[in-house]
Image 1 (cartoon, helix red, strand yellow):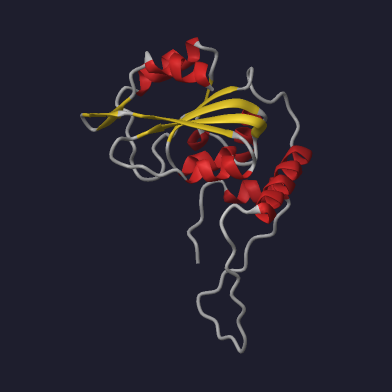
Image 2 (cartoon, helix red, strand yellow; image 1 turned 135 degrees about the vertical axis):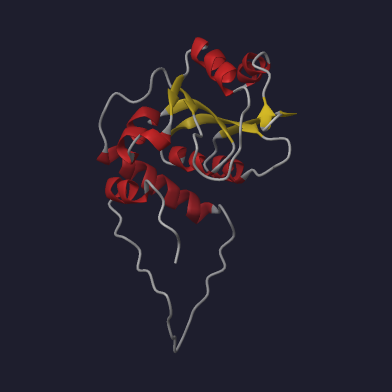
Length: 190
């Protein structure tokens, strides 16, 4: 049994997916175990079908120029960007629109991130919001805490032929920081 996430019902509605069967205990006479390599050709095709299904399900203007700062907010394990206000201000001056999923429903997040060309965000599970909305030729730029290095979204972007970049932050009181001056140089490379 998996724990429910704040947006799972909304995404299931958008994607036309039934709620999963949840079983606490079960007895099987016969069980088949599938061992599928991660992010293979068939998984890429499943991603593409769901991405197409999302686009067919929602309508709206999409993103503001295709540049999104996806704000982590208070959800999940803490990854505190100590100078987030400075980073966000720098990105906004560069034309990025801030989207904070914790404050929005699934449909609003999807509409605001639809076909984003570049998404910048702190590493974390909230990046799942862009799995189905990042443009086919989009770029995901992850702001990585220096004491935690996880790149599951690189595997996703690789699977679909998208680009991925990351910027490792510096330790800071209560979290980590990203020098705002490093952002334009990083973004110029992607």
